[in-house]
Length: 144
Image (cartoon, rainbow, N blue to C red; front, side, top):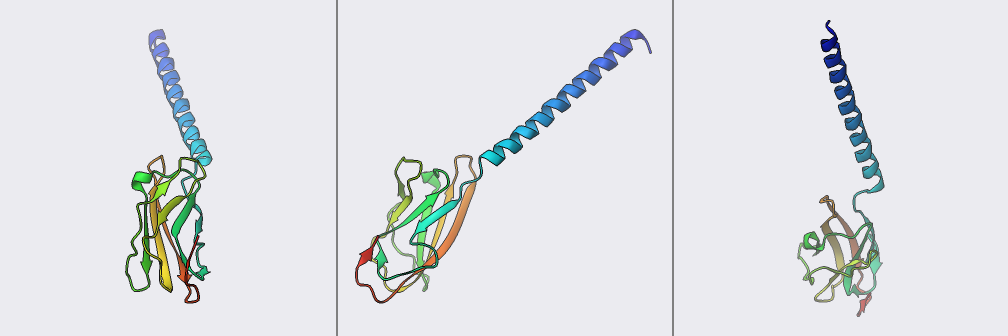
């Protein structure tokens, strides 16, 4: 091998090594960011899942681990008969820990209800879930 070919081979090897190091660093930073920024998740709700209320709630409240993108957020309440209950458009204050609130347009009658929600985090990841609660026949008013 001539001296100029050795120089070219060393330069190629150095360039290949530099690309490999950059690629490995990129993978490590993606892994670290995925660990520090988990996807949005539901932390709690009101009504609480699988509970029995003595009166109709006034609204459905959902607390998430991150601020959801409200334009992509939906909440649906369905009675055991399959009837979808009327809700106002979900709203949320700007405070980081503020819940998403969907106000019921009418009190719920005694029944088992399913709440289905769907939202999206800032990174574009769509998250959805559902839970049930019961309104018992003993109450006459509305509760928070």
